[in-house]
Length: 250
Length: 276
Image (cartoon, rainbow over all chains, first blue to last red; front, side, top):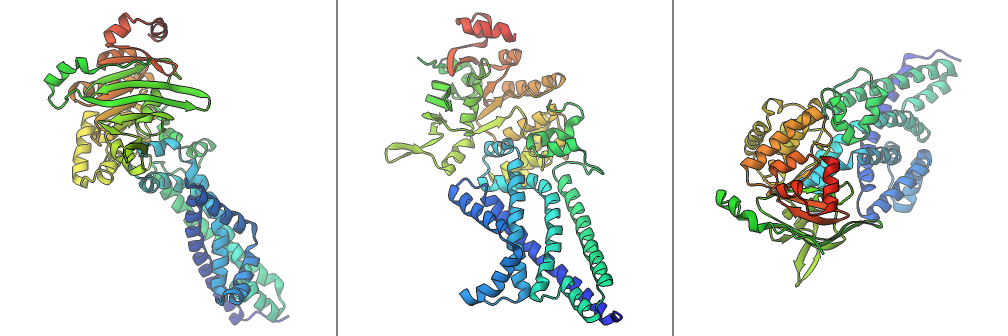
């Protein structure tokens, strides 16, 4: 057992930066996948629903770690693509967490009251306009809290990449531990590091959530009661949930 | 077998008063049948509405009144029969001498002539009042933002909500929301306004405000109205014709005076004594 030198601590800090990059890039890819697949799963053509549903089932049902290995080791053999470990990891994490995210998108879109779409039809909006102007803006505030969960999961799941030698926090930790034999301080420190990162992400998503709710006319609330939350799931209630003031709809 | 409410006979007065309304046939249902599962909601229904007329549909719930409005708004499609609006087929297209189910684009074009106000208002909660009204005129009709806004301000004045333009729908009462919904529908300058039990979801003290706005519109514009309501006094006030529905058919039609005072049909009498 030897002292952990500054240089070794620095290794962990470099790992933080890699973890942040991994999380940001994977989250961006996952978000794109989530919206494309999630919306495709509500499409009126069954072929589109079937294909996107198949994507969802396959990527939800396979391990992100094995997928990462597959992308890193099998793709080069089969297709001649050799991705650097970092991008193989981003691809694997983005595709898997995108599958989870698609469920969030699908659920939130389907939770918007059918009457909202009907109002869109009555004003002769095209289906694409209905989606962009009416459905998605209302579904978005419902997506943010579950997206926050997934984002934290993704942050923690990014530790998988250390197995492929990507220099993230977990990888740095194993290096330091190997060099010094000190498990306790190292792993305690990285626990705290992950927690701090997760905390920052959650705070950020809270702001996003507040902004999203304000954008559908729901005043920011310090604490959200069960009742408003249940109302929020249904658009027709949504229209009147604020109108518990004079003359609500019922 | 079906009631053809032959409205064009009586349109002379309106035509004389308002040259924009020529009393021509604006809506025609031709043997329209609509089923939900084994339940036949509309049974080979024929009826016509002339332009500029205010027609009220009454009848027990489940008699198919709302389905008529939903068919016109293309929120649901007929199983059989055709619907024409201003001479154009609504859910069909003429192609190669025959009728084929219409494509989305055709439906959207014909549908622009129709506006609808819903029982539950269905304002867009993600848009402020002003944008609720201007969004479709700008992005569907292609009006400039300024034009659309000017039109919206006029309409907000008409419904008495000028000072609420910058609020979200959730900040308004039900009655106010419904008045915005009326303005939103009118902003598209439809030829026909469909009113689907527009006061049923309102607290009693808010009903009058909404009905006053609609009376105002009925008496000062030449818009054709097709109205499903349980407000019989309102129906009497604004209607040129009242159609009594039962079990998917029009069993009786006529002027409000006739229907409300001396209906021919026993079923109509029963229904009216239950609701009046």
